[in-house]
Length: 171
Image (cartoon, rainbow, N blue to C red; front, side):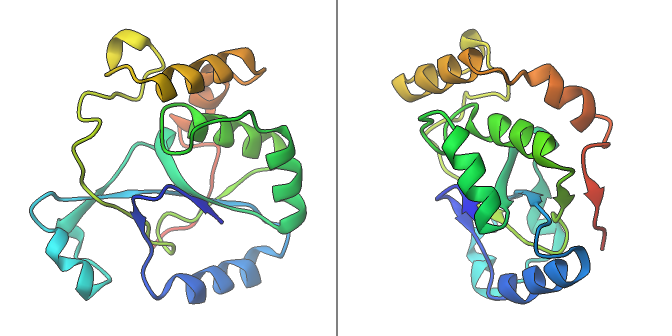
């Protein structure tokens, strides 16, 4: 399992993941969109699962939780550039890699992944365009690594935006 450090995973995570693996098999790959916590409701973290009015799903282009078998991780991580996790582009690269490896299962509903509100990148957008967000050295490094790879955001966007890249799991 690979996740950003600002993601809170509830105690039910392992049980739900085991159910998904039983349903889809040991070699299935999973991705989950994060649930952005309402800035004024993060006190509810002690009462998981959180009510639907305390969070909203983030864009499908910004998943923060990726799960694969150990063998698949060896393959993915061997190919992965030296990204700074949690900054721009690493998750887009991961989406593209998982699409190429096989069709990821959207585990966004059964696997809760809550994103904690923070201030350090309020101006950041989903775009890889440097003018669209606050520039940091790690953003610049990640963007350059992504652009130097053979992955393309269009490859991801064409399938992610219309909802086709996931084999869906719904509530």
